[in-house]
Length: 295
Image 1 (tube, one colour):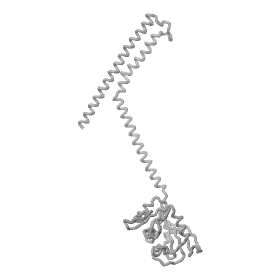
Image 2 (cartoon, rainbow, N blue to C red; image 1 turned 90 degrees about the horizontal axis):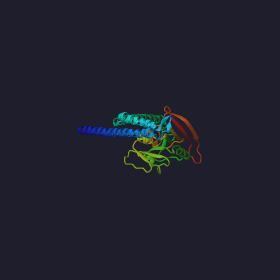
Image 3 (cartoon, rainbow, N blue to C red; image 1 turned 30 degrees about the vertical axis):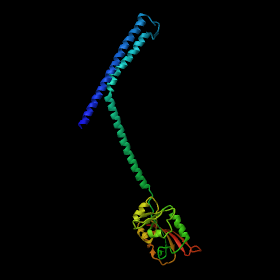
């Protein structure tokens, strides 16, 4: 603190010395200006009025020497005012204060702009949050009349229209599934983000994201407006309470199996669409596409 105080004093002394030297130079220049003015004025008046040089040269009834002395006198007055008034008031201290005030004003403006930007950023974030479309968590499943969906980790039926519907609905979305469901497929589903739920901490799957809980899977899928849950049985059970929609293919036949889809409670789920299909050469069973939404 002592060194800083001494440094400030020394700086002030230097500034005072420099200012004093500058004032001396200004006064010297004024003095030389005054002497030169007297000399030129005397010479001009002598030549004009004593030696009659340029006596006929007049402007507004005044001789040329008068105008030289008159105009120069005003320049001298201006110089005098500049030295003893302007430069005395607008000195280093005044300039320093002006700089300090300008810096202070700029800092206040910067702080004001920062606050405005923070408010705008907050409003923008709130607006984006408000305008963000709610996520539609959708279960997609094919189930028999007795709710069987598989046996020994394998599909029991093959319905080409059902597979096509599954592909069309889930394309471009996150598909969330259990490890066994993933392993029942030849590879990760193309044109989708495959998210696998497993308790195995060291599980690795090619072209897929591995997580350890349904909550984590939904967090990974948070930017997807409609992530799809595609099985298996345990994942479906965990998802029923948090899902918003069910895309069900109901196969009108009873099958033996070891994996089941939960019962759809009509008090919770409302049927909004139904498309019935009859069996044909490519489809061994009658089936219906049904869409449910949570009440």
